[in-house]
Image 1: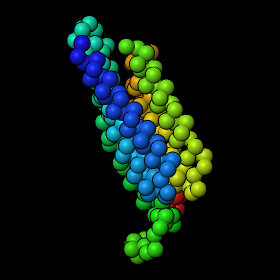
Image 2: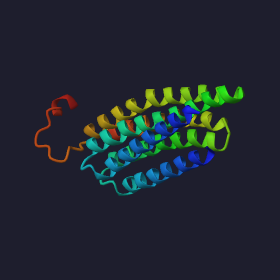
Image 3: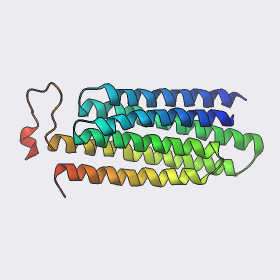
Image 4: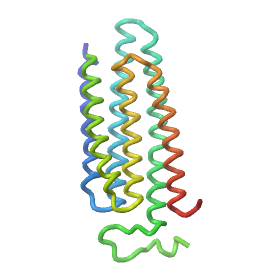
Length: 118
Length: 85
């Protein structure tokens, strides 16, 4: 069925973006660039691997008529909503905490947020 | 079609092991927190993929609860780094 190709495409996009996020986490020079790579790429990739599961559930529901597949798809959509809501807020909190605890970017010479800190 | 999901979970486990390198070797404390956040997100993805591989829908519910609890843990560690606790 044609949804098999869609599942393959979603899984490959998700795995590639998760890998790019991990490589960026390993290779970038300081906290802020590592946070930039890891959070955005990993959230995007996890959304796409979960979309592959949603597509699988709906296609199996259409093929077999088993209602457990509908449960799988709807619960996975709730998990995607939890990822989208929680991941950017956590990344913002980590960046704010890193700046407040005194970690500077790799080649920074001025800190224009210094007077905001206190 | 089942082997595809196990293969995807295996590749995601490889990414988790690579992230663990940064969590162990990170020079500063926020580096380790970033690596921990990445590992949490990848763990949610692995649980969702394995729920199809093992045909257990309960894994997805575990993934939802894991995502919300890891969010609370990340906020708590960030609050600690700011010096609020």
